[in-house]
Length: 426
Image 1: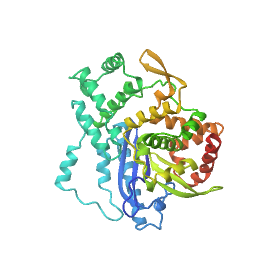
Image 2: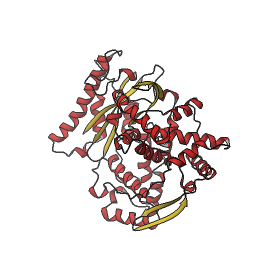
Image 3: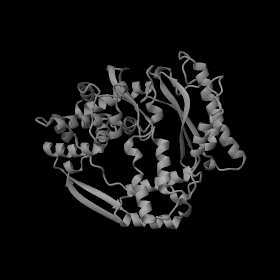
């Protein structure tokens, strides 16, 4: 079991206070983003210290006491399960919620739930293993609708459709290792990619969680073979940045792509970027520098990195209002933009589907997508830093424990800016 308290900076209240939540992971692939009822200003949040709320914050003692009680309540559930000889993976979210419900905020105890709240809680009890796949998908969506973007909330609809088409009578209760193998073979025969099949595995593991069952070993991690992702070379990025006489929509897309490339953000996180996510921080040797600070919507991991001058210029030019079209429209515009700039270099696209490996040779402009920006940025950052993989991982938001602290920004921020200067002269 691992419980880490984090602050969600993307939804501050009118006073600028951001909510603290508990990011809880335990055996069996379980995860719960536990609400704490605590909100403080970002400057008062001390995630690495015992007293996580700075004493300058109003009600800091009460808030720190509440976080301590929440941690104790969660630990007690796992301790009780261990004493009863139960595997950690059998602990359910319902048990944890019941323990947390009794925890007071400071010296105040939570009020007794109303009959309506009790009824709502009853409706949220784990589903049975005979529930339809659509019911599982609806429950998962309701659990995550306040945490994930709409594009991610739709990702299991295709899975439900495929499961129903494969066998309308199949339920979780009848899912065995042999039946899963038959289903996967059916997916591959239908031409599904391994990355798509991986999504089916994840959904089925989520279904086990929702009924409070231990995920079987044969439903563990599905390894996906990936072909080389399309990335632009330095000269191609510079050509893209220097392109003139473009239509207004292509100019807007070019700026969005370059900003995304410098920040190494996914499309969904670029869309979430708001003016309050960008502010000036003092960096050694660089003075006040605009930096972006937000939580990645896919992983809830924090990102805190400086904007190179070229990215800062784009951000200031659009006044923090990107006004992006749909991702599908962005991908269409990128292909038109790439063709206009002359990105004709051949790219070999490799696709894996079970035992089938296929290749398709296409010009670079035909394979451009919004995700190309993130991969291109990562490659250029490694190039500009002489192979510093840690720097790349920090910029990608993969090293959350290191990214979060402002001391880390002071240590790594200048190196990021210097790497971009070497890579692109920006």
